[in-house]
Image (cartoon, rainbow, N blue to C red):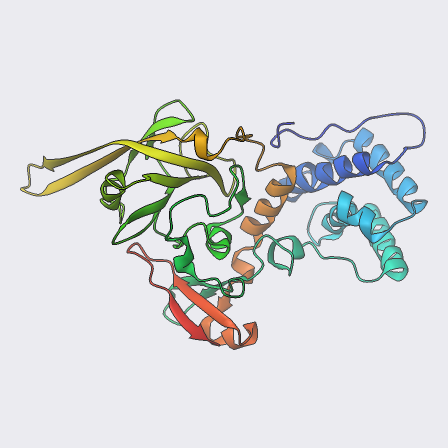
Length: 353
């Protein structure tokens, strides 16, 4: 299923027969298709057609009779769809918003407090759990990242997959850094004085039309020269991640995805002289996917529909969740790393809050 295509739900004249699978499709249709379209529409009736209203009202009728459990909600996320319908200014008809609120209140009385939409991004089990975006008094942006007990950003300065399987996806680099596959928020290459270990492919830096072999243009990227050092070491493998900002046809639709281990087969550099008297070094590495280190075939299934819903929520409300640096004391007193978003290499400060 293409995550960018609207979910097609069955239309039938009989009462809806709800299953976990059909509820999940309804949740995706409401959250990923109808709600975003209604929020932007000048005339909601042009988005929510009479046939759609009939189907959704029949859905409400079926949900009223549904026996709801925490397990069912976790699997279907239908409560998140109802929360979208209840959002102020979302464009949904008042009657539907009232019915959604009534259902949510009924379920809360039955099974307790429901997981809010925000939890899928910033909650304890959310995509950015342990990550707090901050802004200093001078306007500089950064992240405070809590890593797992005993884990440090420099753990990513090691050769190999570090236990990560190809196809893994993160909503933002902060989450990838938290898990230890890279060590920087803003720099594309994870490196030290011994060489490079991971690269995030962005912009037009990937040249080629094949997934497993391509040319990487590292011109102007901090640490690109360390790829050369990696070439003359053994094994000369590097973790490759593709970001949604990349122009490649293989770039994910959102966030960033781990593509596996790649071998640096060739490396070239050239000094270009300009008319104004300046000069620029051009660095290019030729990467080939190392199948022997990752025997599982790569399945480009992520981001899936759930991932896109989380990413859209993150992008839409990111600014509302940024904390001022003076508020970081509320985050906790465990060991925390602070990363500033700069064009030069990130230096983490180890700080006890």
